Length: 343
Image (cartoon, rainbow, N blue to C red; front, top):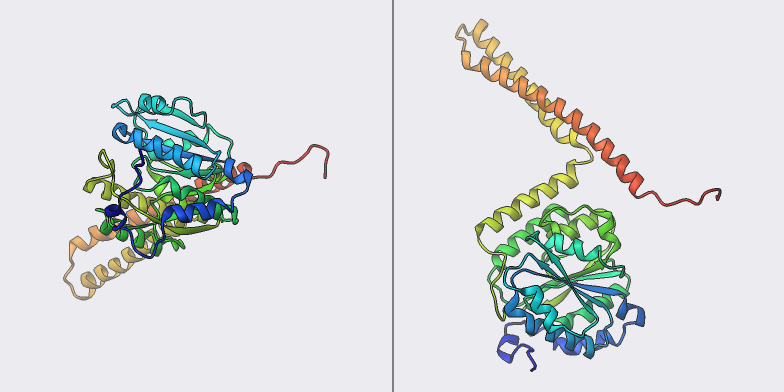
């Protein structure tokens, strides 16, 4: 059965896009044999049993239609609805697909890292199990990678419920991190080697592009249609997800801006508080000895500013030593290997 989106669903996609299959066939015609095979499609799945039959059907169709030979790794992220077993039944006899299992829900980032550790392919494509993007996009991503880009991200085109929140989040990220793309949390493809260069914490897949660009990897994006979810429910909903995303954004910002120069933050802040304490102290002395109208709470404020200021400055010095150790470890990790006795 052909489960390609209906004409009604396609109408939700902007008219500026051509038919995805026509674009896919054009891109596939440019792929070399190495590119067709040297990639892995990573599909994190959490309680996606209702989607599994269509997902596997669409993947098989795309592999056959575009003559793809890459590996497919479906990572069952602690599902309780039998997702992994159903995937194995639907994909029985298809040697390109393997199922990896997490005993508990560990998140999309952990699913990505689990899959990357299980393959030796050069390219990784991160693909959602909900089929809001289609496997027909895969040749287009591979063609861009083949052109020499390290990372290719998708810019969602079409209507979706979280567009307002997503737009604010993406605009904030662009403003703070100066990334040359407009959609951080979408389908993406990249060199597997990049994951060896980064440390990703839980839910930091959405900052993968930001962290990779800070290490010098090249980034570009392409427009990809977004279709309505066909079955099941979204796993990223509710105000708590928004709060977590904003807190993570602040954490990544602090990591990139101040992790190598922590004294820049703690030292400057501490010094400012010490200076403010001195100024407040001078005001207190003026009131006490000139105006003869001492104001005791000012003395308490002076003590608070001085103590907190010196604590922050001292904390900054300790953080500098930690940053130095981290820099030395990074240098050892990324030092190119040498041959004994060679020059």
